[in-house]
Image (cartoon, rainbow, N blue to C red; front, top):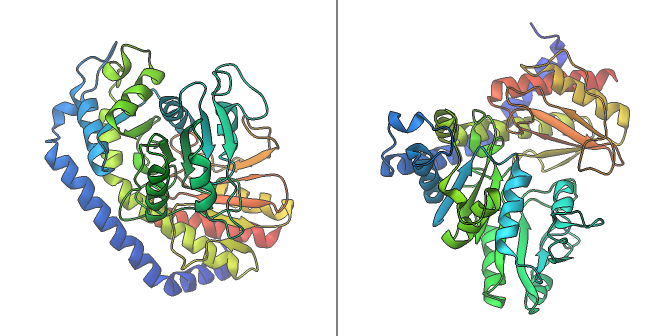
Length: 412
């Protein structure tokens, strides 16, 4: 048995009782999303023959083509690009941005600074070779309002400028204090931008948000990672881009080469995992949401500042926890690592992670390295020593990981 104190176990059961209505809401949403996914599988006549995959150039991969149609249908888009050739979500979003914004134009980040890893892609601070800035794309940020929401008026004014070619909307909060955005909020912002300037291509960084709401947001392009929500914990790597056909084609030519685009890309016997992971994703996301609400309920009782609250509407799978103390933060992360099915014996330590401006501690004992849909917790080692916890392939395992983290926290 795991070394969880009886007192902590009792607190956990009491927290679950208080959250019964919250959990029921997550289950209801998973039912709606599962029906949408199942409908797409049926309409695209998925068969076992599609799971075989391809090698070499990957020409005429029936499974890859069907999966991309399924993603497009589920996300309400014209076309999809779902590939294990995307190294991560940042790679997929970068391809979407290059597809959306031409040299000489300007990219607007609509909700303040994006994820730290996107700054190198854009060329903020240093015009890295191959970045958007290197190819002559300008960049401006529109800060969020004081309450952490998009400043719609300022965004609309900004996109009216003739040099603006694209706008980036990040759904999740990243390492910032702003709010995550619902599919409805993103859709409303997208429509406001298009009404102000129809020529602006709107790219939605959809990471951490897929299947959290009962529908997905509108955008000219949406992009994300397969080792987050839509991979369902089974996809071994990869990313996706969905949206307008012309823009998806451009993203494919950024991923491969102009003139070939999405016609190539071997799937290397991974198709079954990508299909099955996407099919399971709504249920896995519901487990992650339950784990997040459970952690919020327990840690709020310890006086930790949490966001969102346990019973708040959630628009991504991330739970932030402000520890205010690096020792307490590291202890919590050690408990999450100890509750992992892989590398549970490892002690996470802060390190200089590529793409970040300070040491980062990351607890992530996952079947797929770095998979954020599996229980993990990471934090930049700077005040307010805020941890970002996400994932949980099953609520039962996520619950145990959080209980271990609470015990470690209480002993620190």
